Image 1 (cartoon, rainbow, N blue to C red):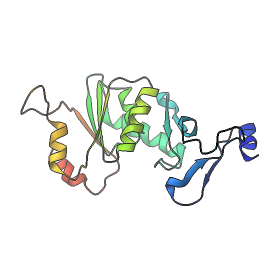
Image 2: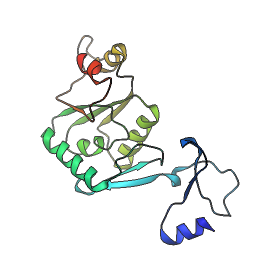
Image 3: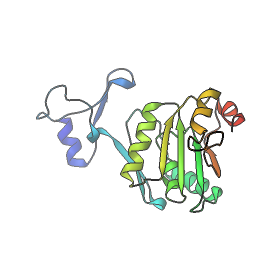
Image 4: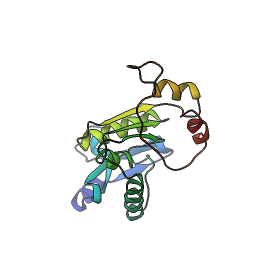
Length: 182
């Protein structure tokens, strides 16, 4: 009944009985019992000025105020003064809130994020926005050896991966360690 009510109104109905891992979609009576979480369960938001749509799981971190988020992304991309030749390194990238708009305005964006699930979401969002100029890596940015292994240009030993701009939002623990190795 709840499922049908939500469907009629274009609302995704979710339930949470315990922690974050207990979030489930309220399913229609016709759904098989215990059917797994699937892509229909993802929520999404858009950043209209960049023509992007980002998908996320209900337990993922996203900005709660979309008007403020859109303004923040616009300011950040504008401040970077991106050109079609820029290669951006984005640290602590999350699900791609800044990545996707930046990638629409430069040659390449390489994201680095600790949480492998967020890396997967960022990759999913790049594909969904038909971008092929992004690379997404999982790395603990508090560990210098991890940073160095990702930033070394394997085609040119001893050289670093091309990066003309660096993006970090928000400042956080671990940023000092990461920045000291760039």
